[in-house]
Length: 351
Image (cartoon, rainbow, N blue to C red; front, side, top):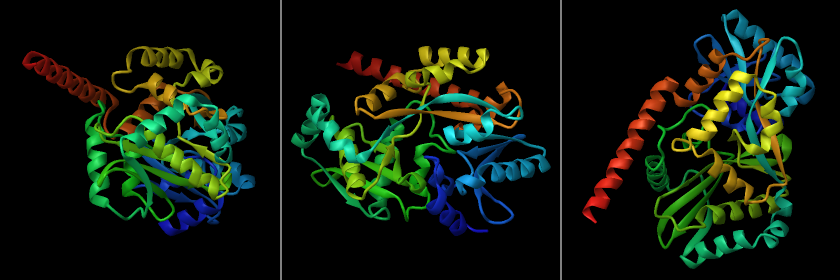
C-alpha cells in the first residue's frame, strides 16, 4: 500500500498527536492485512520503534497492535510505541506482556477558550504587544511557498541549538514531509521572515499538533507567542476542539506518572533534568508552555511488548531520535557547547 493510503487512514482515524508525522521522511509503514490500520515505524537493531499508536478505528486498536507485533516477531524484533498516549496505554500497558514508562507530558488547549484565557494573562498580552511594536506580523501561508526563506530560518534556528538535528518524531523533518494538510504560519518583520510555525492535523480529536516552531536569533521577543496566538485563533475559527504543542520530556506536570517508572529510569531522568539543560532545556520548555495556560497536561508514554522496560529499549529510542549513537550525539553536543563558550570568551576579550 502507498503513502496516499496511509494519509487516508490518518485523516480518518488519527488520534495520537503524532499521527500525521508518520508521513515524514525516514518512516517505514506497515499496513494490516485487511488495510484497516497503519503503523509508522523505524528499526534500530532488534527493536521496531512505532510512532505513537497504530492509526485505525478505536475499536480495532488492540487487534491492529497485535498484528503489528506478530509482524515484528517474524523479524526477530520487539516493539516500542514511542510518544504513545493514554488510549494505547489503557489497551496494552496493563497486560503482563507489555510495559509502559512515562516520558513526560503534553499540554492541551481547547482553542475556543484561547481568547478568554488570554484576557486573564497580562504577561502573555504584554509579549504579544512587544512583538507587534517591533513590527512583527503573522500571515497564513501556503506550505509550498517561500521554501528558500523557510530553509534559511530553520538553518539559523538549528545552528543556535546545542544538540545535532533530531530525527524520527523530532520537529525539523516536518518541512520535508507531506505538506498538503499542514498549516504554515509565517512571522515577518518588514519583508524579512524571522520565524514560522507548522501545525499538523489530529483529525480524530478535531484538532492540531504544533509540531515545529522555528525562529531566528534576531526575532524580537514575543514572536513565538504571536505565532501561537495566531494559530490558536485560526484553529478556533475552524471549530477545532484540541491543540497541543507536543511532548515536554520529563515534565514536572507528569510527576505522578514518572514516579511509576523503574528506579533505574527515574535516576537517569533526574540526572538529565538536573544536568542536561545545556543540551536540552527541559525546564525552560515546560515554563514556556505553562505560561500559555493549557487546560490540561496529558502524560506521554513509551510502551514495549515485553514484561520490563530495559536500558536497551531506551538506547534504541535515543538512537532513533538522534539518528546516530546517543553517545556520539552527546559528544557532538559537548563539542558544540565548548565551541560556543570559546567564542563567547573571545568576544569578551575583544570588547
